[in-house]
Amino acid sequence: MQTSPLINVMVAAARKAGRALARDFGEVENLQVSRKGPADFVSSADLKAEKTLFEELSKARPGYGFLMEERGKVEGTDKTNTWIIDPLDGTTNFLHGIPHFAISIGLEREGLLAAGVIYNVVRDELFWAEKGAGAYLNDKRLRVAARVEMRDALFATGAPFMGRPGRETFLGELDRVLSQTAGIRRLGAASLDLAYVAAGRVDGFWERGLNAWDVAAGAVLVREAGGLVKEIDGGDFLKTGNIIAANERLTTQLVKALHSA
Figure 1 (tube, rainbow, N blue to C red):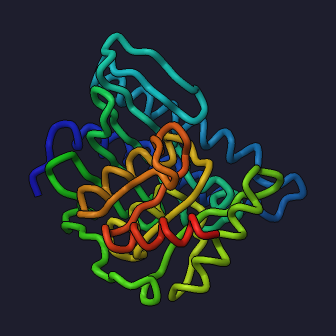
Figure 2: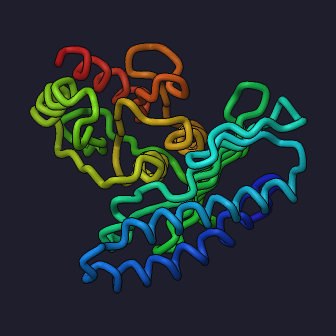
């Protein structure tokens, strides 16, 4: 499978950061039994992964800007290109020794999402997509699922936890979607939820209140796999963090269900 120089750069950075995260994940499983718990260790793993990504991508593409979970916005001399990065999406899973977390790297070019790489470190699954070139899992071409009825469809979502706003809205939406579908999964890493939509493992995904680094790479994947990615209420999902992703038919039905909640 021939990949572009851009994707090669993104994949190399993700794999390098991923090797260290995999080692740290092995340590976290041992730290689970300690009284203090692994929280401090995880934050250092997060920062270390982000540092690796920042250094590797800066070296490969000097001047590109960054929007990162830990460092925030880093202005580059090249104002047309910005990396949007989550070095460890699924921190709570990581913290508890659950092997479902990912590195997410998106590229925004001239205000549009141009490429995305999501690397599931433990399973060594590399999801990648570039605008106009399709979406892939390792070397396999991806397509969103073809189911068109809510009753047959499985959806992923995320829940607002521990005092985060929007709990009542979420519970209303959850009730409405549960009553119409084959099921809902809450897996704990939005980037992988979007990758799973692209791969047809789940039929759709919605969540409110996410950050740009949670969704930038995944949005490219879903679109390049033939799906739709929209803001739930019609705005810009990178700004609001309210996102819905599925094939065209299911998107229409899911939006309707959410708005009726």
